[in-house]
Image (cartoon, rainbow, N blue to C red; front, side):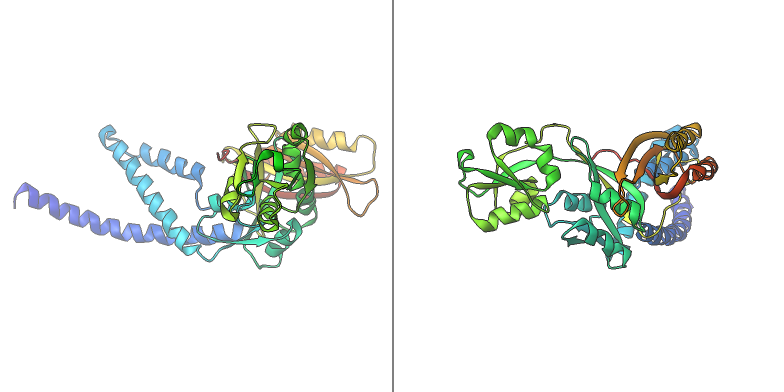
Length: 365
C-alpha cells in the first residue's frame, strides 16, 4: 500500500465519523429551530455564531489549519441556518400595515422564509399572537427622532406577550405620488402620525397640509387608488414600487439618521445565561402612592448594576391621573443579581412586569 492509498483509507474513515457527527449536529439544529419558533427568535444569532467560532478556533493548535477550521465552522453554520429555515417555513409573523410598510421590511429581514401576515392596527397584530393565530409579531416601539409609539408601549404593559428581541431599522421616508405628478401639484400629504412627525420640517417648508393615515404603506396604496395628483404619501421606496407610484423626493425625514426600533414578541419568554454579553432587559411597573417611591425604585435598579437607557411614563387607560413606567436597561434580569433586584423593587411597586431580555441588535441599513 502506497502513501496515497493509506491517506485515502484514513480520509474515508474520518468521513464516516463526520457523517455521523453531521447528522447528530443537524438533529440538535432541529431542537434549536423548535425553540426559536416558540420564543420568536430569528434564525441568525450573530453573537452566538461568533462565540462558536472563537471557541472552535481555540481548539486547533496548528496555526496553519486554524483559519481553515474557522471557514469550516462558518460553512456548517450556514448549512444549519438553511435547514432551520426549511423547518420554520410554516412560521407565521404578524405585522401592522401591508407590503411595503417598514414593519414588513423588518419582517423580511428577520424572518425571510416565514409567512408574513398583515393586520390593520397594532392591537389586532398583538392579539394575533396572543390567540395563537400567528407565532410572532413585530411592532415598532420607538423612533429616534419622533419618540415612542405609545399604543405599542401600552400593549406591552397590558398584554401577555414577551419581548425576545429588539431590531433597529434605518428608515428613509420618501415622498410618493402618482406618475407624472409635479411637486407644485401636491397640496396634501398623508401618512402614519409617526411618519408625519418625522417629516414635519419638510411638510411645513413646502406648505403641505398633513393628514393622518393608519399606516405608511396603506397611505401609498390610497394615493395610487384615489388618482388625485394633489395628494402624496410619505412612505418607503418599496411601497412606491409595489403600488406603482413615483418617488418625488427621497429621505424627507428631518433627521438623516432616522431609525425605528422594532420589538419581536411571542407567547414564551426566552431566558438568557447570566454570563452572556450585550444583554438588555425591559420591564414595566407602577409605584405605590408613597413619597419617594419612584426615586427608590430607580435607585434599586441602578444599585444592582442595571444601567437604564430608557425611562418613560405613560398614563394608565382606566385610572385617571395614574401612570406606569417603562424601563429599558443594560443587564440580564434572568441573572441572580436580577432576581435580587426584582425582589427589592417589589417593595416599592404595586405592579411589576418583566417583559423580557434580549441581545441588542446592530442597526440594519
